Structures are given as C-alpha cells and as structure tokens.
Amino acid sequence: MFKRVAGTKDILPAQVSIWQSLEAISREVFNLYNYKEIRPPLLEESGLFNRSLGETAEIVQKQMFLVKKGEDEFALRPEATASIVRAYIENNLDKLQSFSKLYYIGPMFRLERPQKGRLRQFHHIGCEAIGSKDPYVDVEVVSLANTLLARFFIDEYTLHINSLGCPQDKKKFADFLRASLKGKVARLCEDCQARYERNVFRILDCKNEPCRAVIKALGLNNEHLCKECAQHFEVVKAGLGELGVTYEVSPLLVRGLDYYTGTVFEFKHKSLESQQDALGAGGRYDTLSRELGGPDKGACGFAFGIERLLLVCKEEKIAPAVKPLVFLILLGDQARQKGAKVLNDLRSHGIAADTDYESKSLKGAMRKANDFNARFVAILGEDELRKETISLKDMQSGQQREVGINEITQIISNSGPMVDGR
Ligand code: HAM
Image (tube, rainbow, N blue to C red; front, side, top):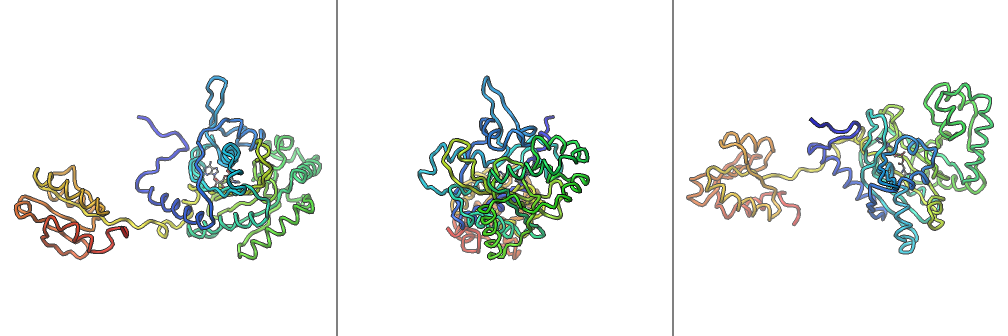
C-alpha cells in the first residue's frame, strides 16, 4: 500500500473547513489593507532561490526539492518572496502600479527532518509590498500580520523586531561579529563553527546553550546601524507603538535569508516548541528587486505558516457556519426517479440537499441523515408518490407534516436561514 511522503499531510474533509476559514479571514483582512492576490507557479528555476536566499542559506544548502531535466534545474518553491519579486519584474508590475501590494496563500516545500510544526510540504499565508522604502510600509505590514493573529483568535504570542540595516551596515555587523568571536570559535557548536565563515549571522539564533552564552556576552545593541537606518528603525518602532502593537526589540534576531535588509520581525508562540516556535516572520528586502535584474524598489513582507497557526488558534471561534442540509429518503425506484428532480430543484434554489445512495432501508437512511446532522428529513415513498406529497420532518422542532411535492422548495426556503441571501 502506498503511503504519503513523510512530512506531508492529507488535509481531510473534516479539517478543510477550518483551513477555508483561515483563508477567508485572511482574504478579508488583506482586502481591508488593499492587497491583491497573486498566484505564482510552485516550480521555479532553482537559481532564483540560490540568488535570492543566498548560497549559504540553510534552505539552499540542504532543503530544496530539486528536479533536474537535461541542463535545467528546477526547484519546488521553498518560499514565495523570491517568486513574487521575479513575477513583479517579469510582468512589469512596476509599470502598472509603481507600488504593488500583493498577497498569497499556498504550499511551500522544504526537505526538512519532519516533526511537529515542521513539514516538508507546508503552507504560507503571506504578503509582499513592493515599491517603497517608506518606514510606514513596515508599520503597516507588521500591524497587518498582528491583525491577522487577532482575527484568528491567537494570543500569547510575542512579536520580536530588529533592524539589520543597509548592505553596508550588514557587512559592518558581520565583520564585527567575526572579530568579536575570533578567539571563541572553539566554544561554539559544530554547526556554528561552520557558520563562522559561511554565515556568521546564523550563530546569533543558535539554540545551543554554549553558543547562546558566548553571544550573550557580546552585549549586542544595534550599534552597527548607520544614521539613516537607525532613524528608519526609530520611525517603525514609534509607528507600531502608536498603533498599540506590542513588540520586543531583539538584537539577536537576524533571519536566515540573504535578502533581508533593515527591519526584520518574527512572531513566536510560547506553547510551541522552541525550535519551531515561529508562527510567522518577515522583513524588508530593499535590494532583492535590483539583485534579480529589476528596478530599484524597496519592499517588505511576511509569511505565516498555516500548520503552526492551526496548532494555536481557537478553532471553535473561527469554524465556519455549516450550511443546513435537507436529506431526502427515497423508498422504491419510482421515488428515486422523482427524488432526483426534487434534489435538483432544492439545489438550484440554493438549498443544500442530499440523499442516501447506499442503504435500502428507512432505518439505515435515517441513521445517515443523523450522521449529516440534517436540518430537515423528507421521505418519499409509494404512498406519498400516489398523493403527490412528501413527508417533511423538521429535525429541530421534531414536527412532521405532509406537504405537496411541488411546494417543498418554497416551504423550506421560507423556513429560515437555509439559503445564503440569494
Ligand atoms: P520563513 O521564516 O522561512 O520566512 O517562513 C515563514 C513561516 O513559515 C515560519 O515562521 C513558520 O511558521 C513557517 N514554516 C517555515 N518552515 C516550515 C516548515 N518546514 N514546516 C511548517 N512551517 C514552516 C519566509 O519564508 C519568508 N519568505 C517570509 C517573508 C515574506 N519575508 C518577507 N516576505
């Protein structure tokens, strides 16, 4: 028997409704902030990610699902920011609208060691605002993410923010870290020893205690920022404060991808395990468009991991209202023939309706109606057919009556919230 690939999940019908709710809430909130949906392909040239995330990024080094075809190498997208900037440039979106606010919902792929909250196929809800270096864009992006968490009824999270500064500041910071850590490399874990040369920033978010102690002793405090970047960060912090968004400045927050410049942020949840406690993250990436051959455009965005949101959201508060159902029990071949027409009528009037295609007995069909939690059960047997009626039972009030077979749609339409305002 075939099994699903480790680190992937079947999202079964019982769970799909909560996914749809999260997606519907997200779309509503993105619309409020005037973001438009974009759907780039799941497959890109692998070079796009090597270039954008950086050759030394863990995702590029170890986690890409690669497909080779002749000379070409493709990757299942490990994240969407690079794809969206590629699409922005390739489709000349900057010519249509110099400032584009885009959002996306969809699967991402990373070849990781699967565990709770860490999958090989997972899903992002995210957005990218491309075309402005204004610090108030950062404020809007972070507060939009914060609003989403409130709308998902998620609390007990913390928002951590930091600024990496411009590319020159980043270089200054990396040089400073290498110089400060020079005599201490032997005290770092094996991974961090490799990171010292390759990607020194990653040492800052190592979870190993000895590495944390070494880092803590450095007493980092954003001193690497130039005047302009420090000013930008001040405006962002003040703007968030003005909106009542609570945050902690975390000088050790660096993010693992090369494209970040300036503001970076991460939402962590205390009930998740420390290795996987980020619900979502994002930041500015002012040089990526130019790096990929596009115009010089500042940009900022974030992404939440849907599977992690689902671990902590209050499902009962966001579960969608289930549409009431009429369940038709058809006894005998003639009734089945007539029933197909009744079902069709109900559905064409916006009333959800179903029947039993399996059991032959009234008892079995009643059990099915109960399983579906049907609001009405309508029975059509030989007797009713002769009289051109149908027995209609309101499962809420328990009342049962015989109504004309041609009146049933009208009667149910008039009985309450069976139809969506159409
Ligand atoms: P990221 O931090 O790599 O950022 O991913 C964002 C979120 O996706 C994480 O905080 C986490 O919730 C979720 N996530 C990541 N990997 C996994 C996994 N293997 N299994 C389950 N969930 C996962 C980005 O991808 C950036 N593109 C975000 C961004 C958008 N920055 C600017 N714009």
